[in-house]
Length: 487
Image (cartoon, rainbow, N blue to C red; front, top):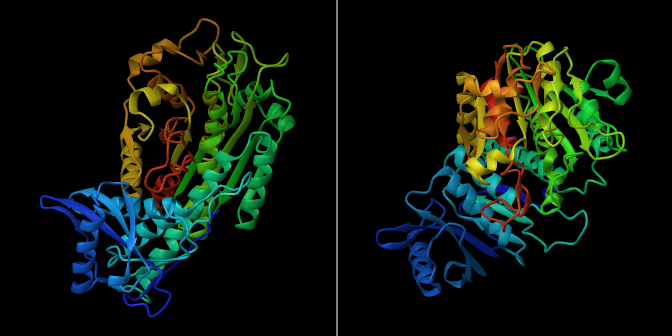
């Protein structure tokens, strides 16, 4: 949850001067204070002397505290931005690194460059995301409670709007993080569907939920097959945001495997605890759809959450079983741990039946994504136009998505004499093969597939505004994609 209150303030607040945050970059002459409008010449001179005394290097993710008497504060905090000019994303990261690591400070004045709405929004996002704490199961150290961004845009309509948008985006990301971090004993298909239903109705959205009986009767064979081994049956959730006058329709589809044991094709025990994050795609879709409503975007959005728990049991789907996806395509299940594409196939078919202008699915789909791009860069596949739109949206959000191809020749590896296609193919290029599998179910519509397998869960130490645990990756990219589609 968001615990920090953020306001815009004129560059010279009169009281509560507890702590001041300033940025440091690395130049050819060494570390240098970034000079925004909030700092006068005397303050810059004093801060420059202090950073030399403290040995501040200005490296990315470096946060250093020092005495602030020389500039009228109790504490000065330096946040490093690294080499070169301070970009929007570096300011976002620097603000987040400060609030992620600082403790024992109640109020923070933020003297980062904030003389444009884009900068105000980015700094707000960074502060809020860095201050986020997941405290459902334990007590975490108290984060900073109040921050004032010192900006000449205080009271200006564009500045205040950027601040408000930044808070909506941060709250959406933190919702996705909290869902990923929740224990799978508490977040399972039914409870996830209930939570989505309550949140969507509270935001004025229309909601439809398919339970296991409806899924079976309406031909959602992928969801039924994947959820069959669990005592917690699958769900499919459809969220509808339909603003008056909107003519463009975007469908968002999220993989929501609330825990992935691998099914009969059981995963190794090492690292299986991270498989509670296999619903990060559905979390991103829920969060982005709610954010679209809060921002009153002028685009129709349909969000699909394909929810199941993949467990082994006497009822579980077996390798060699043939299942029928909604719409009639048969699939031979050669590996029950390639389950995400099965639930997505059902949801993609259903999404395409609504005839949207664009479909974007997001999923922690393949280990091959991690092998190819690591834990901080996500992949995007699809038709060239939609793929490019996603990359542009991600760049604007400060998220890293790399465009990947869908080589037609790899589709041959999905052929099987037992069904229309198999659920796995050539291991080489496995991320691309998974994308080709999904492409079969979008019915020729504009489409992009976002594979966030590595970036969805940070198992290392925190960095920038990203904590250890769920990251909420993809939420801001999806919202930017929706904004770009507005009529």
